[in-house]
Length: 346
Image (cartoon, rainbow, N blue to C red; front, side, top):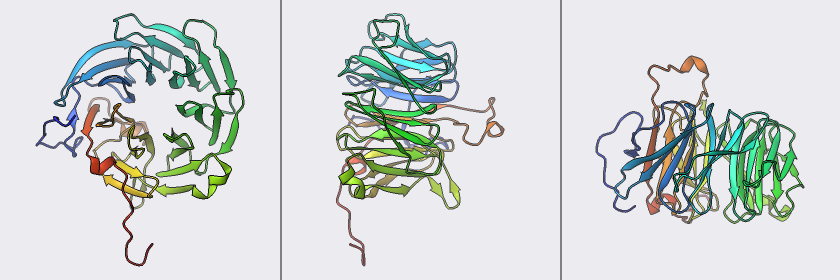
């Protein structure tokens, strides 16, 4: 993406001069997913739509296709071959959309309550869905019945999968950790954070995971008992006494650094190993509810859209606007770097 052009004008929703995706959703944006094989970006939203754009080398975007659910859509994932998109939402359906072939979407899974999280597990050729009905379900997309249903203690709020590691955060502030070699065995541990979990992200090396909460805080957690001394938490997405939710955590696909996006309208890049922030970007005038990197980490896509973190009284449908922005990443923002010791500190 080195050929991305430049934008000179700024707007309150885009102080960092990111590229704007054309024809964005008409209601709150709930998830963003890049194809693992091409710069095809999918967004799901509260207007019941799943939309796809092709992102061009100059930062332009071309709407490619769209499909509908019966109710708001909450989550999306790509198949590893880049041909197919999966989505789930408030109509309790998991849909499979063979987007590249132009095929019609079909329902491949059902829950008894909205589907909050969805992921394709290529190593198992299974789709996994996490729902507010307090279950995880694994689906062979050729079969009607789930291959396995895992009962949980509470509703699914967040999920992250890197085979064989899967981490699921539930409404009771518990974290369920699974080794997918034996997906029926749950290792439950309480969240290290005191407040509701908003997001989780498994380490690229699969040795642990990050947890983000509504209280502007991220926890770095290792799975191995011998590594527990490396666990720590840090504050972020705060402005003096104002504290905002951490809505998304995304690991960079090459450098294993990560981004956090928050209800304060900011996104930051971090290096957990040197325990430092690599870059803080300027705040947008609305929350960032979701974000993602493309497959080679040269684009960071983020939504600017109301996330209901301040309730209905702060939402005016007649003036609300929704944006998807594309930030071309710089090496200085996303590459690991050693911590520079300050005076008196080692």
